[in-house]
Length: 631
Image 1 (tube, helix red, strand yellow):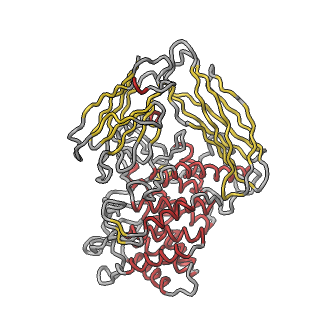
Image 2 (cartoon, rainbow, N blue to C red):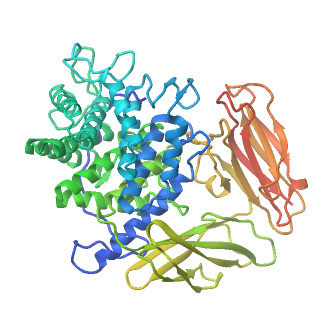
Image 3 (cartoon, rainbow, N blue to C red):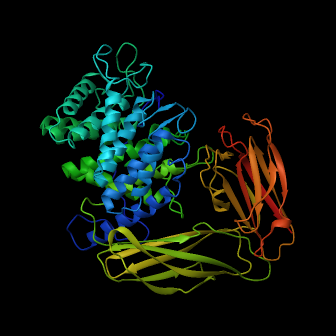
């Protein structure tokens, strides 16, 4: 549940579309030439790479994305959008896993800060509505009536919070009935209109949607500029709160779904006004890129704000599909290109700021929330009629660390992972690898054959690479690239960002941490010098010490409730540190030195794993800084 802080909206203008990056064909008007097919196939491949990264954070035991309840609903809905748009059906089981495991009642602190009342409802009315939309998406994918029935149950619960006795109508944001705001009512309209459009003969939900739309438009929350402020004050007047992108997007989406129900042309007129205000002067874009208030270089979005732009883009996709307006379609493509070209690291993680803007004090954040949000931008660029072929490639590890031995070359193994969709048959793929001058990569060229059977489950194959780093290579980042092609239509490039380093010294929650973070699992970072693992989550650092290493140690600045384990292979662990007290305020913060020498693996690598010593109380081990030395 979110209460948004009042603030001013960013002033911006819509710029022209940027070129497609990473070796792909540049964007051209639809139907201009066969290059359109290549661009559409590339859009599918980009979305697939990003969706796979997002789902690597899905936690199957609790059946959610760690530590955020409503955010998990939106992330799963985004995966539903991905499956619907691309035909990929690999993640249906995760949707059902969440439905079956999380539909009961749960105490506060287990999945949400609030007690969950069952059927995905709680005192947070907007949270309940997000889950209603998620289950309609699941119904659309599967036609399993249980999902639609759950959405009806949720809507019936929310309906009890529609209250005309205050401000003339509207749904309360919370069970205590303290606030009427844009998000809760935009969700209500979209939810009820979606139900009507899926329930033959319905009149009840259509009436609710129309009442909600009429109330929202007369409430004063939509200001004279066509922008949606956050909510109403105690006098039932616009509170001047921040124009958050998700409120704007939900108003657009609500009007579009209601128009599908009624065919009222006036609804589309209002929707266009809301949309044009979004991308016009004083709206929500900076240099053509969708920009949240908290995306400013001197700010950082909280865990809620990280997902707002993706919600906007979900409904903007609906707008572009509905109107085919060239301006709206160009905006879709521009967001996708900016995310892919500027807001993505080598491992396919997508960040908070779609422009890629970052700085030392407020770095661009990367986590599953930012991944889900930016994924919506990539999904929107996938054509509604799914291309019959696609090809994607990734390199793993995508951000390896090399700690070279003195006097000789160092070898690193990489794997090119390929995925393809196409009608049944054989798809021959050629992979070309490239490395910096003076390096060697073997093989430089390879071929493999994939055997796809449609879009539902992409076919997979891989190519192994051996990269030779010459002795004397200076410390720094180096790119190894693998480009996969099949015929004249399919091409996709992947890149490994290889860090050559002779020292280990980094703050957590920064880009400098990422290459050393072998397995983030369900851990989180809320900024610089802050990585923590609650419950059953953990995180693992890997230090690939040089082949001639005889001794090594690491120093962790750590606090709260931690268990620290060490391994030489990343599989067999020895506990070396445990906090036995239940501490929540960092009073035990200290530098802890760990002798790694007894645990060095046959390749001289050492792994450090940090977990939670009291997994039931939500205060796991937190690490601020890491360093290591060897001889």
